[in-house]
Structures are given as structure tokens and as C-alpha cells.
Length: 209
Length: 246
Image 1 (tube, rainbow over the protein chains, first blue to last red):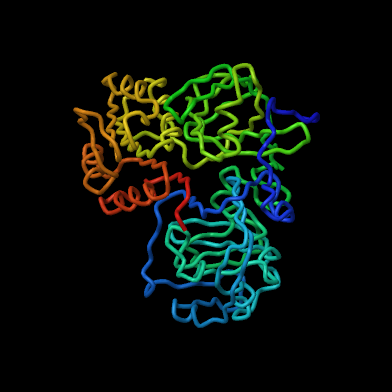
Image 2: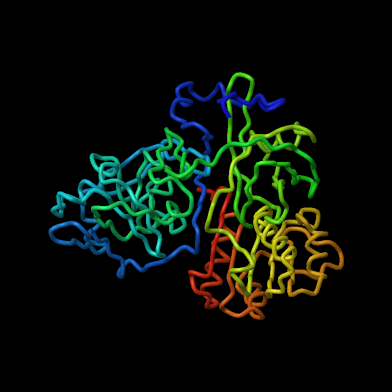
């Protein structure tokens, strides 16, 4: 549609005057603010006992690496306060997590120079794909605490990937590993009509956007 | 690069009150290319000055309904879009729509059954599309809907569900009312739990294709219970909405 359509009678609620004016600049196009933390997942919530849980880095690395839960907790972690946008339209500001930077994880392996894409894979069979450049330099972390408490299973606990600069489906819940690949490979939602990259500021919601 | 899902203009051709807080809107969409039961659409509202908002709504109508689709919308107090749809939109208005969206929470008769549907409140909407599709296709796939509502006035699609269940084509509908039951109520009167799911699932067997849609707490409860009852995780598809209280 080249000419903008105007919906009869629609004014909109807009950002409330009480909310700081600069909040609007933190809300990507087509999104609305929510105070809640909605849950969306395609199937039942998997529950892996912590003594069976491992996190693996595999694929194009010199030596694959695997951590147990205790070893993972011993990795250098930090607090992260980030804004999150879900493709289902909600945006939540200033979400507080604790977790391990993907940079820190990669310090423990030697990446093959041909590695260009990362496949995050999870309990329950979920996958999502990201260019390597989208998860480096502090852009992604594996979180195991939210708001000071262990991450709840329905929110992806014991650990989930968080990639704040992409729609939230890229932040794989119940993550168990990262696989480095030369070629891109669409993940679960990326194979079902959702955008391959998912940059919320470019409104890359669906395939072809 | 795949073709983008384009925005198109739909004309509101019918508005139906389902419950005191839920209405269905029929949209005439001449360019609609069809959908599968369970998918949703995005609706965009734009003000004179260009301010716009988008929301996703499940499609309630069956794919067989050519050139139109129905969405069913619960009025969210203090919402920005649903009160507008309920209070301002009249027949003849036009709305921007794009879709269909979502390729996982879908069912069509070719997938077969038996089929178990579990709904809470307006979570019944995408499941209704599946039931309407099933009826329109003349399928006799053994199917059970377990539908949780708060009170008798809040059962969305009640008349149509009772009618569909009366066809004797293999569909049974079980209601549960969690807060308020009318005199003589013979359905369930509590939140969905293991025993209820066991009773509803048993005639279908543990190979049932299962679709659960509703508030997060209901979906978590139902999905976990069905795993305990022996349904494989890959037979259970979920769609969730609503706050979690965190």
C-alpha cells in the first residue's frame, strides 16, 4: 500500500504523559509496552534435571567444549539490563538478567575461521539461527537468573539465550548448546514463516519483510 | 527473498456478540489467499497523524470460507486495540490486515487424529477454526474439546459448539466452569487438572494430536498433565497468552 490508510475513528492511546518521553524512542515500530512477562512456546515446557544438564559448544571449533551445570555457574557472569521485544508485539523495558556472555563462552574454545553462523539448540528440539556477528561483543548471553531469582522453567529455565537486539524467538529457551556452522540453516520459527534475521528495529517479523 | 506478506484492506461485513466481553468480526478480504486452521493475522490501526498500532488475532473461521475471515476479539480493559474494535468499529469500516501467520499451531484433516483440543477462555478461537474446518470437510476424526471458562455467560461459541457436538460425527465437547455454575450444571466445575484430562483423553488414546491454547497457567497445567498421562511431547502443540504474574 503506497498511500497510508487511516483507520476511521482511531486516535490511539499513545505513550502516557506520566511515562518519560524518551520511552517512546525505545519501543520498536509496531510494538507496545507491557509490564508483564508473557510466555510463548510451541510445546510443553521441558524439564531437564540439573545433574543431567550440560551446555555444549560444537561444530566448527578446534575442540568441542561442554560444561556441567556447576561448571557453567562457575563461569564469569554479570548482570544485564536490557529491553526485549517479542514478534507478537510486546516490548518490555529494563529486564534484569544474570548470565554468561557468549563472548566468555567462546573464550573457552578456538573458533574455526570459517565459522559464520550459530545454531542455538534446546531441550525439546527447538533451534534458532544467528549470524556469528549477531552474538559477539556483548550482544548475547546465556541467562540463568531473572530479577534475582533462578529463571523459571516456563521462561526458559534453567538457562536461555538472550539476544536483545533481535525478536525474542531468537532468545532460545531451555538452551543446551551452540553449534558453529559455515552455512546458515533456518531454525524452528525461521522455517515456519518468520524472518531469518528478526531485527525488531527493521520490523523483520515475517519471511519477506 | 520470499514475497512479503502484504497488508490488505478488509471490510467489516458482520459483528457478532459472543459473550459480554467477546465479539467476532467478519472481514471481507477479496485478496485473501487462504489460511490453515490455527493461524493468526495481524491487524493494524493508523491514526490521522500516522501513529499506528498492531496486534495479532487468531483466525476463528475455517479455510473453506473463501474471500472472508472471522476474528474473535476479547475486550481487554485499558487495552488500546480491542476496546477500539469493540466500541468504535461498525459494519462497513475497513481494517488493515496481513497474514496468515504461524505455521506450527495448525491442524487440517489431512494430519488426521484422534484430536484433543484444550482451551481456556478466548484460547478457544484457533481451536474453533479447526472444528469448523473439520465439520466443513465432513471429517469424522474422533475429536474432543475440553473448554474452560469462568462462568456460563462466558462460554464463547456455546451454541455453535453444542450444535457441532450434536452432529454425531465423532466430536464431543466437555465444558468446565471454574468460578460460577448455573443450577443443574452437569459439566466440570473446577480448573483443568490431571483427572479431568485423563477422563477426556482416555477414549482418544495416548496418540492423540493435542492443541492447547489459553492463558499460560492453563497451558502449563494441561501440557504437563498430558505428559504425565503418557502423551509424547511432540504430539502436544501449545499457544499461550496473558501475563504470568511475574
